Length: 215
Image 1 (cartoon, rainbow, N blue to C red):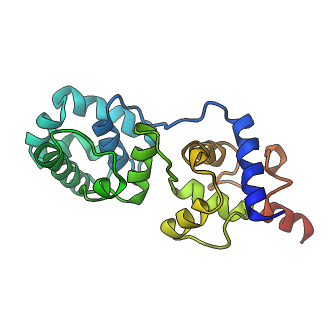
Image 2: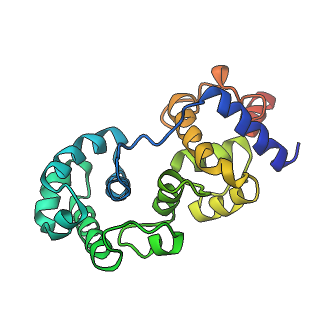
């Protein structure tokens, strides 16, 4: 089976397993997803979803958050960890949206990458979830599972994994595929425990599992 054939089979099986997979960060506007994805670094989505409620109660739009002081933002987002740097990035990002983009989040990948605190993973998430454009979000689950399955070969760098997947995953499937990998990585092919291969829908395809069986 070629890597392209493997990718298509993995996509179809994960679709059946997780038909309703979606972003687990709660948001109603594009700028809120920008804020949440920055806060999610080294923090759980569940905690972020709780913390942002207080943030948005106090600062309900881009202008309000842009005018807020970094110290005030940090006080609210501190439970997410790395409060100082996250507050600094959120403040600078909202100011840039206000001053250069009329308060709107740009729907262009390169423009998103210009925003403070926005890297490739965040930009792809916005492109896919908000604007429904082709996107591949290489988070830790994606990187771990794609290596384990054999879609990529011992590649840990997020950008290199992303570039490899663009060659394998149909553009219209990329965003949902990555959300399903997150679900699978949390529920079955876990990082902090031994993967539950006995109930994995991909076990017969998984390169690492087959290697373990044959060792």
